[in-house]
Amino acid sequence: MKHGFLLSAGLMALLNLTPAFAQDLDFNTTSPLYPPGANSHSYTAIGTPAVNVYISVSSGHTTSLAAPQRASTGLYSPNLDFDNPNETKSYSFTFGDPVTGLEFSLIALQYRITTNPDHSYQDKVIILATDEFGNTVMPVIPAGTGYSVAGNEVLATSSTASDVNKVRFPTKVKNVTIVYGNGPLAGSNPNSQGFTIGDMDWSGIVLPVELANFRAKPIGSVVQLAWETTSEHNANYFTVEHSLDVMNFTPIGRVKAAGNATRRQSYAFVDDQSHRMTNYYRLQQVDTDGSKRYSKIIAARPDHLLPALTTYPNPSDGKTFGLQFNDIDTGSLQLVDFNGRKIDFQLIETPTGHVTLNPLVPLKTGLYFLHATGVKTARLVVN
Image (cartoon, rainbow, N blue to C red; front, top):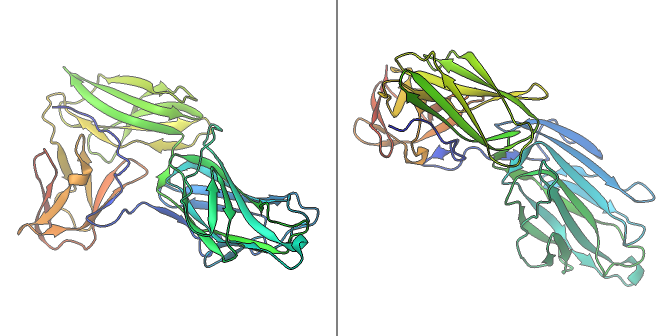
């Protein structure tokens, strides 16, 4: 039997329904609310896993430009009265941890030709982004009506307000700066103009250490642990933790991390004090600033007699079940009752590495079954 678990980006999914892990920054409702007219603001602990977002707004204007304000459509900047067509206003979004799947819209872009050409304006937006290492990340800007796209630049081509739905980033980003100004149709002293940055959403965060895999392999009376990272940023060390009941973990060793790396790093640790029963392991990754994160929990037995899929506690109250599994396809998981009827549920990985199965409706007293491709069915008893 092969022991170990490959971390899956799709673990936290609402099976048979829609993804359950998208994060959302709604400028009109997310707390703490964006102060009217503020040029900086901080959001804390958005989503799960939580991420902080810091916003800074600036311009090279000779006089103060109107500051943005929250609206039902996003972060709205009205009445931007530039002194000349070369001036711009910048909106910088910095994420505490890099995020993946970031998307947002640009709303109400247009141009206006006035009877006095000096006062004409033409909305232009340039989008700049970097990852946590300072590398440039190019946005994907969809084609549409009322605007043109050239690389990371959007130019209004219609006198009717048009929206860009949606700007997205194919890879992780740490910082996004939206530079708003004028295109070539603008006059020497453009009239007041404005636009809106739509609410932002993303699929998850990229941790300072990206763990590619974590495996446990019994060899005789010992268990060999191995893991790999694809990137590291300010990583300090890994603490290997052991448990016999999945709930209470004890540190059994420490392995120094590479620190900062953009290439794959390999690590190993041998538990020579393992028990002749199921041994559970997780990694505690500690950054140089002292912050800590946990890996997924894996399991191994020196005698190789390890169930591929187990639940705990069993019997349960029917509201939540803990799961322990190694190499299985989480997308193939199905929960059914005694008559074979499918039951919708949500899988959630907690910050401590535990995975729980939460039925959308609490289960009634009885016997249930959890299926997964290629492994023995697990029985769930509800009292």
